[in-house]
Length: 234
Image (cartoon, rainbow, N blue to C red; front, top):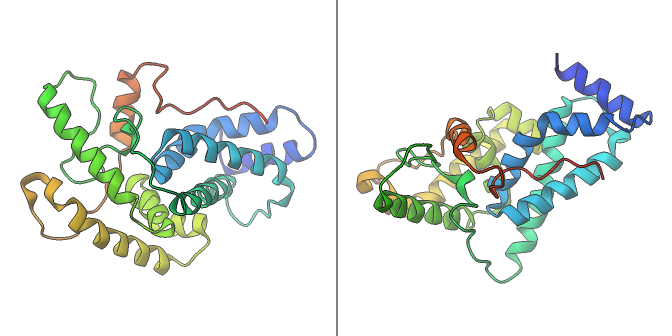
């Protein structure tokens, strides 16, 4: 059985010198941490680098864990901070190309009516439309300030509650709500043409894509770029 106390026991064992404990702990949460990194950065290579940065930081700073939040919240906080650092650096550089459609599958189905990846065969014309929508979503997300993007990814794409997101981002729940609201308002004019029927009423709420991700994982090739990198211990 696994749980918060089990995670704490593994972290304590790691700090005490157990060479296997941290790898076991990270392996438990790797898929969700990878999904957060991928959607927060919008780029598989950036996500892999951010996740690696976070892994090294957590490995080295484990003795600083205060126990005032669940270990998984602590890990998510480190990953999100690593992603925010990369997003801020990226905003100071020249614009980077959008990821290839297959590599960006983790951002599919982020608007109501946007179909996510599915195992069934689909019409190539539909795939082209979906690719355009995903590219539009990626481009729109890239315009958001990093703090707003992180809040939107956690709440609307990963399905965390406002309170959980506040704990991860170390801010007040009201701040999370405000950031999500402002992010949705910024996305509306950029994505309204891609909403089914082009209906402009109401800001687009980004929805959870976990079910679509599970379907994609079952159908995807094992070497797909959207799968998490290996959880090797640094």
